[in-house]
Image (cartoon, rainbow, N blue to C red; front, side, top):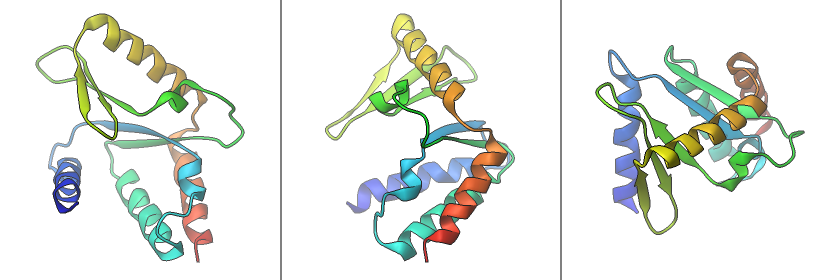
Length: 138
C-alpha cells in the first residue's frame, strides 16, 4: 500500500514544477458526498483539492448532481498530449493500467471527454461548490 501512495505523491509534484503542464480534471459530484475516512479526512481532502485547484495551470470541473447518465460514468481515463507526439490515453482498473495509443481509440476517448466536459460546471463555480462541501464536513 505504501508504494502506490508514494507514487501518487510523486505524480502530484509535477503540478508544483516551475512550468507545470496544463491539468484539467472533471469530477463527479459524488466525490463531495461519499464519506471516505470520516469527516476530518473528507474536509482535509477537499481542502487539498481546493489548494491544487487554485494553481494557475490546474482546471477543475464538477459534474453537478442534477446530471443523469453521462459518459463519465463508464469509468475514469486520462488523455495526455506530450510535447513531442500524438495524444495517448490511459485506462486504469483494479488489476492493471492500459496505455491506449491506437488513433481511433484515442479519438473515441477524446469524444467521450468532450461529452463529459460539456456536462461539467465552470472552474470557478466548481471551486465554490468544493469550498461549501469542505465546510460542511465538520
